[in-house]
Image (cartoon, rainbow, N blue to C red; front, side, top):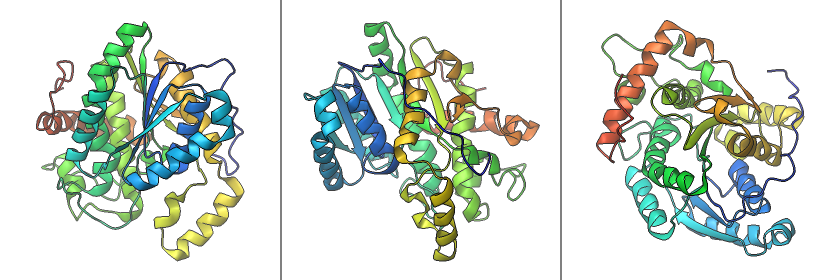
Length: 331
């Protein structure tokens, strides 16, 4: 991608989400906050802010409803807070039970919550934290909500939408050179191990898992009821780089000042994927607003092998937690 990112345009006029319900994870700051605001400005009837910090979420809810653009476009909007800690499978399951008990439709699911830590930590699930938050919990959330997304599509006659915040950085995975998968390793065990943890590659590793899952998905689930895609918004001026050590944070902040997009523009890209892109985007990563060519590692023989291994391991992992749909068969 060039140093200066190409311009992006707002969503086309005329999009209305009147009567629709949307969920945004990681909605209390950054891209997620702008996605939530733009959904409200597009007249979404109900927007669920899925957040780890409920008190902060409540403050964000009040702030959103007080914004003039929201009051003008959507004076009867409903914004709700439901706790979601994507480090914990149990929290994901509690979130979905709470949502399903209160709502009979779901039109848009924005899987935006994510982290990029440089220190190896294990989540309470036993999995490495970046992998848990950025990949595994998102798959569980998708599977738990998929029946309602499908039922909503049956009611409306239009596919429901699931959009995952991704990254071009997945091509920089440590699997390519720095920490390749050993012959006797499983994919998830590899990423849980201390030996495989490369601090500055782990965010890319976790985003690779998301992309590999998405690329395998259309082989099992078609796009007639639910369109699932991902997008990369490029460099965005958010707090994600705050985890960097100070000696890196300063130059990164300088680069961001020159080339980073605003969260508002990232929201345009996100909602293009969720509301404008069609069935051709199912199981694809959009770089800005165009379907991206798979990274070199993804297209390699090793990448294709890992894609199948990851799918099978994910089926086994999810089977411990939820009812795995019949289409989610091993390869």
